Length: 165
Image (cartoon, rainbow, N blue to C red; front, side, top):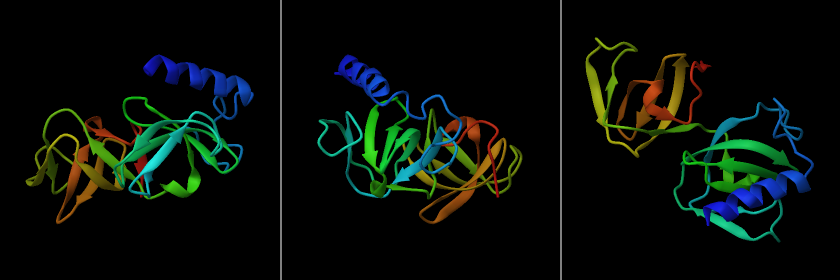
């Protein structure tokens, strides 16, 4: 299945003439590529190509899950999850509201962006959190009733060194 997905990616790239895959900005939105978004829908189909007539290769079933957009074509966005799985999804299934996925081991959220700050919560691997501001090394997160700062090294859905206000 994984080999078929890789081949489909290569064929789609050739078929679409390398759409935005090697560019810094998307040809449709003029937004940076790659960039992170989240799933707006509770379920979303990742297709082999950028239309509803293409075969479904992957089904994402987690609302708010972070995804990385790597290419654009019309109303379609080529997305990947943290493991590289994905395909072409209709833009209406995606949101610009950013989330991150906790990676590795348990992450301690801190009240301030430094290791000496008191803890405010502990997050298990796989938890999806809302992304707030980032200073390049730390990002402010919110999950249900908890909020605090976590180092970007423990998060998927934010680029290393990313700064957000």
